Image (cartoon, rainbow, N blue to C red):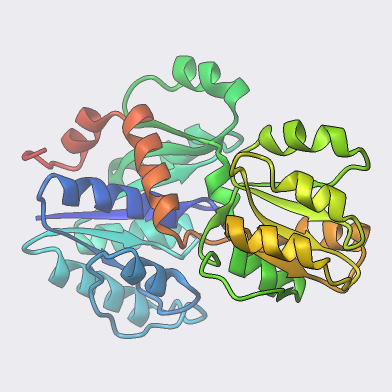
Length: 318
């Protein structure tokens, strides 16, 4: 049927999220589609399976071996698995020449995931007839108009706005990253955190402060029960509280946290050290949560030219 290779010349371009969103969209239209991941390395294969996608088996190629034999093997697998369905392959090869070679040998077209600062004219020229289209990813709000005016016709399908979900992590992931411990058992570890707010020094500001953002991880000194209780009055915006310096909270704080089902996390580091660690978690962020999929699919449908997409990739039943 159809073979789509989602590729980029850059690492962390957002290919996994684009592959997932397109596959979810096709599935919603009752079109048989599967995902092909040539290299069983990293978290991508597990991610696709956990999100409920059909993942075709592969020969366990290694990304450090890009010999002609491996390239031919990947091409053959794409040909084999795209005969009776739409196959979406995530290319983990950031090399235009190899991606074009695979597209040529597998009768595929490439959906290129670009950032706004790339030399788009060179990409179009190099990929030539094997380029099915281009989608921009992680576009900041102040550049929406620029994208819409400059790239408003084929081969451009649209863009995916920059958003908090793309850099979010779960409460469990924060606990692991910070080397923290839960004060009491809870079942909230898989909830996503979109914002981190550091506790202030004035109690009167707490409710307004913590209500200003959604899905908040509050970072508060372990010896400030007043601020900890203030964070719990955010109307449900605070999803977890990190307490610094390894100081155990007073019993009433624990009581209220249990009552409101807000996990308390104890870390040994001070507030400054903990904030520094939190700033580095983005490097570990992966596309690994159902809410991230819901969000990226919504953004894609709002900013993506479906008609142009189906025409370019010859998908006639959408």
